[in-house]
Image (cartoon, rainbow, N blue to C red; front, side):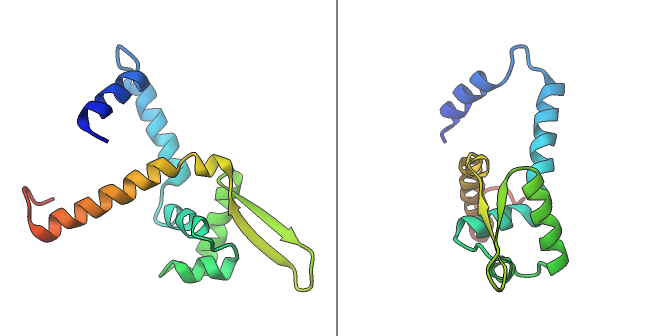
Amino acid sequence: MTNEEQIIKAGQLLSNPRNQKQEVQALQDTMYVIGGKWRLLIINSICNGNRRFRDIQRSIPGITTRMLSRELKDMEANQLIKRTVTPDTPVLVEYSETDYCLSFGGVILEMISWGKQHREKLMHGEGEQV
């Protein structure tokens, strides 16, 4: 997104005069739902086709079984993922992204893009160091 596009979007999204309390609340709500070390990685894993608990866990280096279980429960409560239980033998539990989760996809893509640009900038020493 160009700077001009960002200015236009900001004008459409932000109130005039600016309401800092409302903006802070919106940022806090977003960080609560997607914050933490693991949530975006879990969303990315599920969106990449990992549906079963062990597949998700294997795709995320360093996440513990307990942490993944806790995060999946929280994410289900926040309607980001759906847990489906198929009563076969053995029982099959699968996780999938919800439409609500997919609505966040543009933000995740922008974060991936920014992260790649940031790493490139640091590796090539362009401009100021962060």
